[in-house]
Image 1: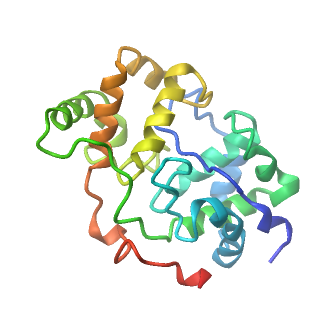
Image 2: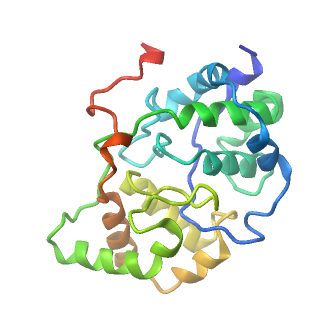
Image 3: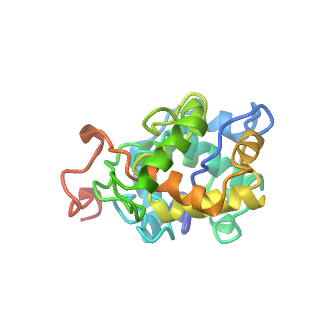
Length: 236
């Protein structure tokens, strides 16, 4: 294991709720380089040991939204977000020092750790919004989702790996809501301009309702850990 590779991601490896546009997801750069490399899962596990301090050994993050769930996310999305942070296309002052090449190494580290994360099963008990199915707020959130989000994120929030659209099903409510607000306020500089326009007229209640719905979209059982008490055996 390379010493540099162990220093990755002490804090958030954030997941955008945005979609991709030409400027937002331009070709070239470290993102494309990492995607072309053959990942080393063993090194990826070693790199992830540092990430686990915040995202947990299972990659499940925190229900309170402090850190997102990484498990289950598309590798392409994870690579893009890391590359964006390193290139200062996404503001994350806390994480930035830990993502620098001098801290973690070159694009190979990105290829390795994201490939490892992609193998982790998702939390069967993610943080959910306040309104269960059957409430008016849930129903309105579903309407907003179908009208505004399905085109990019899919009918079940599954995203699209090839287009770098993140998977949002199974993500924590509080984390998604915070990112939504940051996109609206222009705080997420690598958010797709199309999404900024799409959500421009959302009220705060609209935001809460649509994210509540997303947080309650069922995740396929094949992608879930056997229980909420599952522990990553690589870190036992």
